[in-house]
Length: 329
Image (cartoon, rainbow, N blue to C red; front, top):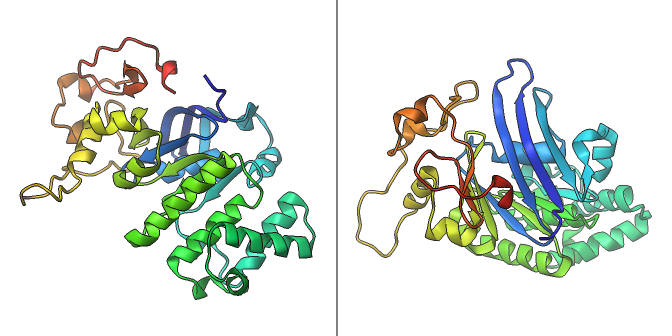
């Protein structure tokens, strides 16, 4: 097996004052060139996971335990300055909403060049020249004109491409994409996915791809991690997730996708909602919404166990666990 480029073990984050859990015992690994998709409803902890890995937690949130290692370097055991040096250079992120992530009073070329000067030590002229090359790389039309544009002068798709160019500026080993296709029309969404696939192939990027759209996951991911209320519900190769989902939450997510070919009828929904921070159960957090819940689900927490091969789920249903969890994460 390849050595992981990114390893997360037992990551737990809590509210700094109350100690209420946000993420609990998250473990996974990412190998060189792999795409791991992270899915779940809003409030499941997807963006908080990305910020935890990047070391960008807000002041009201703290990591209570867990290890984040990048290419064998344990970031969580180092100083914040060391993590800051890795951020952008070896570990980069495409943030969720480019209109708020980009500086509205800086030209996009200057925003890309700023990363190049700081992370790669390029001079002003060299940075401007490389910024133009990056705009070409992410296939922005007329890059010679767009490099002087402000974010509000660009379309949503072009702003997202600028965000990708900024993330790639220091040639990172791991790229975290937090819902990079949200709010884009299907044509632009397809273009962004094609671009990310091309960058993965040409640069050997490892990609942690966060989305709520299972259709996007089917197109780009090698493996999928399903989050629910801050815990891992299931982790498996993408084909296993779609062909044979094991966790009731994963099954419910797939069932809620509209069937465009079948007869018309009511859409399938998941009753209830993701519990709020501070109101999460210590036992199975999905049990109040689960059609298969049993008495044990209400007082004991199910831990991830291997179902078969590289597929693991956290559920008390009789899966027949045979291997240690380490075999899949």
